[in-house]
Amino acid sequence: MKGFFSSMFARLTQNLGYKLLALILAFWWWSYAQSQQYPRETRTVSVKAQVIRAGSYVLLNGEPTVRVRISGFRDDLNAFDAGSLKATLDLSRAIPGRQQTLPVLITAPANSPVELLDRKVEVEVTVDTLLKKRWKVESHVEGTSPRFQVSHVTIKPHEVIVQGPASRLQRVRRVYVRLTLTGARPMQMEELPIEVVDAMGVAVPDVEATPSRVSVAVSLRETQAFPIAPPIVGSPAAGFRITGWDYEPKTILLSGESSVLKSLKAVPTEPIDITGARGNVRREIGLRLPDGVTAQGPERVSVEVHIAPEPPAPPTHEP
Image (cartoon, rainbow, N blue to C red; front, side, top):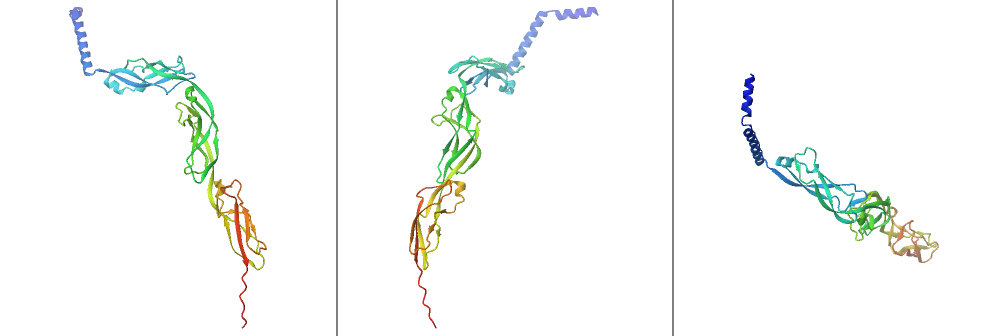
């Protein structure tokens, strides 16, 4: 038995160098054949950089996107999720207020089937100091209406915090909510977005308001034409009667809160007393307007009441 194993070992070790060389060549040929059938490819993917250690610094134009090369077999590359790559941009050594080139470190998940060819890339960024400022919120009215005007706007809260890069914050001139008179109607505490604009009325980029929406209530003054209704009181002298009356103007434009004007049918005036009159009565009388309502024109009305003798009674004929 011992001789059998000795004989086998001698045969296996005979020409051992040639046998190892043949094995290496076979493995190399197999690897070459595999690489020709399934070649490795190189692709470039986009990865959005994440900012770390920013402190009081902020990037203008937002976080940059970098291009990263990866290598692997086609099936692995097709299945690979570029979002699993992590790109890190460290701002701890950045210099605010100028454009500069900073390194972005790239890392891949452990046991990734693809090879990461770029572990560090460079990107040009502009770094600025992050600032905050308190601003009063204004109202900006757009459009026109023949009947309505804004009389009062209530905004809650009336101030917001505007935050952004120092160079952007310097451009801010107005913080407001936008109102429109087209199809105007009173608003009861509706939520409207905050707009932050520069001197030209253009939205300032990279800034945000906190809160981003505020509650707004709008009171409207309405302008509407109403008929004038002069009241006549008293009676003419015995034997006289009213034959008619005339007055100018007959209508007038009133401006006031919509809720008040809605209750009006006609505009009263001071009364015209014709007690004991024996002829026409002419008066200049004033309008009686509700509180908060104004007239768009003269507030005096010219009235003339026509009074004439009663016609004689027809003669009676005795049979």
